Image (tube, rainbow, N blue to C red; front, side, top):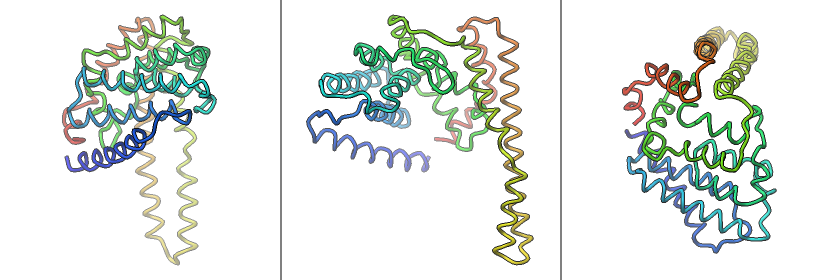
Length: 289
């Protein structure tokens, strides 16, 4: 509880300073669409942590920030090329986090609409990102759901914004489809790509080399440092075990996807949710709080 209050207080202070500066100045061409979206994420997170979020409150925040973005884009001198990845990133973030009013505002601007089918480093389009529901089911399928020291993933999945009647992802997907957004892969394949990428990254982790290098450094700095060498080996050994555990979860998830490749998107979402229920305990969520 104390950890939660301290972290929430720090974020809240930062947000107050950010918002205070923003309110103190009239809208100018220097305002940034990406920063507004990131501020929105902080606002929803803080409300969720303090249990103050509800459908009406969340929707009000979404609409207010969407209107702020609308004012920014109304400035004829505003250049979206100043945004990360020349405007693609804000649209991707808004879609993958389910910020449907923001997605709608952005797509009404021809400059962002032209980026509708841009792809990220995994080859996912904007619609792919929305369909993976990264803050909900997309998190559930990750090994992080099981191996996460502060249980952040299980906790964020309980946010009313994503689990309540608002259904932000459904609304985001509907908006994208209205603008004829394209998808590059089916939902099952998208999840497999995400997991296989993680597995590939873990295979690059060379623990034996780390042990050797760290041991040599200790020997050079401290004579007869066998204890230090043991500590390094022990630490890396524990890390290696955890990595192997995470690999096992990823392989298990990929097999589950292969075994259910014939399911519709809705059926797959239900299957994933059911599969990971044992990985999320109320104790995990309570410990985080």
